[in-house]
Length: 111
Image (cartoon, rainbow, N blue to C red; front, side):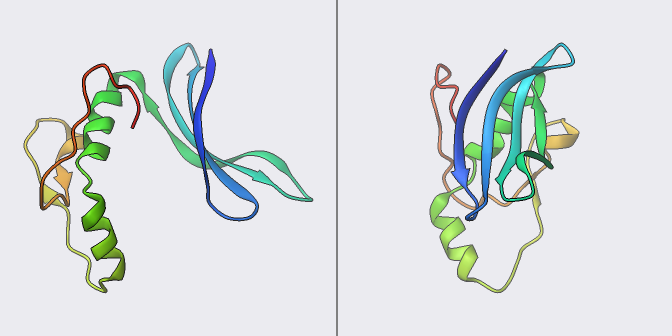
């Protein structure tokens, strides 16, 4: 099973593609760069895969990002260290969230 969720333009030759796929018999979300150039057209090695069993945790981390904070941090020259958040999971113990979190309904599987 492969289903492209969407893509984001990174630069003139590269898109970031998000897709649901089945790799090695395990369903997950793949976030990978796709390049189109004279030398090569296709997916690169740059990217990551989120296994299905970690998707809810990944989605919660993404949803905790405040877009207003991103805009102010992109103009700031200082970077803060990640702050611990509640949760037992090794992968969910850090967050830079300083204000209100965005929330999606349980039925909404988009990020």
